[in-house]
Length: 157
Image 1 (cartoon, rainbow, N blue to C red):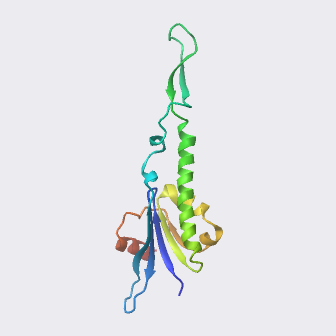
Image 2: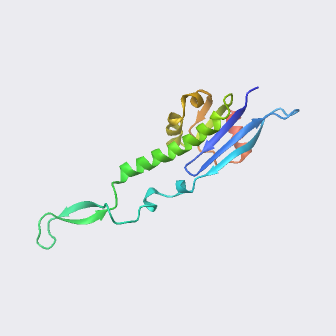
Image 3: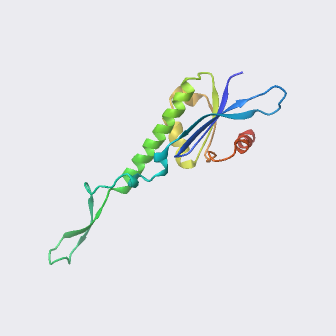
């Protein structure tokens, strides 16, 4: 019988549980075999950017000091491109960790749960061999749920 795992993750945490079938027990038990925390996942990307260099002008104001076209106010960055890039990097980091874990277990099958904002991004970044062994993917964050709730959630699918 091949190994089976359940992977749950969000921006700050990665948890991997192994399904084990102790003799005499009808339902498999889940045992946490890997846990990683990513402190940078808790912070907004703007928390790390504090210097004044590279700011962008935000508007033109016609009435400042009689000079037409004078710019007022400065923005720290172009928010949407930076935010998307930060989310892409976090998804890449998480996908790399999952890949690394399952490349060491070439026969293992696994189920996956992550919030909707991460689920597809992480799955798309996995290596083809690891992605092929994925049995079920659920767009729901279960990383902070108790082990029995995670097991029950996947038992019902």
